[in-house]
Structures are given as C-alpha cells and as structure tokens.
Image 1 (cartoon, rainbow, N blue to C red):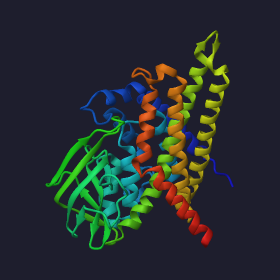
Image 2 (image 1 turned 30 degrees about the vertical axis):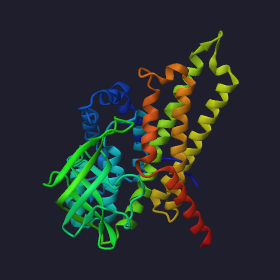
Image 3 (image 1 turned 180 degrees about the vertical axis):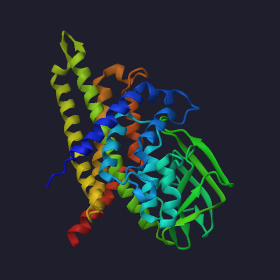
Image 4 (image 1 turned 60 degrees about the vertical axis):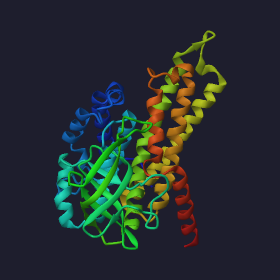
Length: 371
C-alpha cells in the first residue's frame, strides 16, 4: 500500500510552498505579532483566496474545485511551515467540514460558494472555557430559532463572518450556523500566547441560528468534525516541526564554540537526532490519518487521535529544542524561535488537548480490540 502523495499533489505542494515563501515570510508574520490592531495578514489571505485554496475540498456543484482532502493535507503542511497568520484552518478544517458533513443541500448551496469565493470567514465556536464541552455541561443554548450564551476562546472569532456554534438543545446538543453580523452578537478580542492567530469571546443574545443536521445530533457531528480537523492540524504541526528541525540543524552547523561547530558536540547531535525522529514519526502518523480521512475509513477516529497526539508532541518538542539549540539567543525577541514555540503551544489546544486525544486513542483501540 502506497501512502505517499501523487505527483499532482506534490506539484500542488511545491506551488503552495513557492507562493507562501514569497508572500508569507517571517517578516509578514511579525507584522501581525507586532500590531495589536492587525488580526491577520489580509494580503496573504487575499492571495490564498485568489489561488482558490478555500474551495479545494468543496464539490464543484457548490462552487469549489472538487479536489479532495489529500490536497487540503498538502496545503495544511505548507501553512504550518510558514506559520501562516490567516484564518485558513478555522474556515477550511472546521467550518467547511462541518457544513459538508451536517448541512442540507439547500444550506450547502447557500454557504459553500461564498466560502470558496472568500466572502465567508468561518469560525468553530465550540469551547466555553476549560474542559471539554458536552450536552451535560453546555451553557450555550439553542431553542430551535435563537442562540444564547458565551463561547470562549473562538479562534478567528473576531474576524469571522459566520460561526458553527455547539449549543445545547433539549437534552442533547446541536450544531448551529450563525451569521455573526446579526443583532445580538457581541465580540471581544482575547489575548493568547500566539497573537499571530486571533481569538475572541463571542456572546450570543437571542441571535437567529440555523441548525445543521438533526436536533440533538451535535455531539456526534462535532466528534466527526474534530477527527477531520485533527488530521489537518497534524499536517500543520508536521510542517512547523520540519522547519524547527532545519533551523536548529543550520544553527548547529554555523555556530562555533571553542573553535568548532556546536553540532560536533554529542549532546547537540543527540538533541537534533531526537527532534528529527519525532518529526518523522509524526509525518508517518499524519499520512495514516490522511489515508483514513480521504477514504472515510472506519479507522478515522483511531488515525485522527494518533496523528493528533504525535503531531502535538513533535511540534512542541522541536520548537522547544530549537530554542535550546540556539542557546541564549534562542530566547530573544529578534530570533524567530519563539514564533514556532508559540504556534506549537496554540495548535496543541486548538482542537482539544493532547491528553483528551490520548484518551480518545485508548477508547478507539479498546473498541477495535473488542470487535
């Protein structure tokens, strides 16, 4: 079985890397970091929209390119390499996938063409603070017509035009599509460790909403959305890990101490080797996740959890050890190491913590072995 990407998919990745290298360099990322009034890089986002990437996995009948999830995986890795300060993951991994999975044909026809054209920026309003939300502890509610409650933190919630809200309905939970320009929506920007990706607190006060899927089916649908997003986030983490490993390796070759490159020291060699091994393990698991995602395999929950856990571990370790390899310089604002550490910590909680995904992995393996 060949888990590698096709030549066309590799070509897409090469073109994406070329485009992002030219338009989304680290100085472009720092513009967002240094400007409190800049929630995302609009120039980079405009280029992504013009390239048609938002419609990559949207069927042609709904205005998309009609490609597939493997192509999105390829793009996700390139996004991770440049730490793209744009709402791509919120719109594509979460919002679009939720609409594709749960919406009716009429709802898809109304919203997906606007996503593909860049007129809609999506957000996934799932969390209500610490802990995993479910029907038993949700405070945000939906009565079939309006939404009430508070969601925090919502990635890209301060710039999104629409959101998928996870809300309690009756004794269960539902996914609700909300236009964030509607009356009753109050948004407040929330500061996080990584300011290059904006976050917000969103308060809903009798805001009109449109249910996606059946009433009370939100928990099951949300789990499917998170499985899909976990694989795509893993590819971002793989991309970021690779760059962090390269940064550390290049510095170890160039930095001299006591008349020799520090890369010649055994301790540094072992550090770099462990970083590389973890990144390769994460890539292998991400490929497994990509296969399960693209084929809608029954193994997707297991593959998603495995790729998620491995991706989080790899990116965190690589970004941390990259700082250590750079020594005292690695901790400074001027050196770019901290940008990758910030993004690693953010991605590790964006779809639930690694601890949560470890529990999901154990549950998936137990169900598999019991079958």
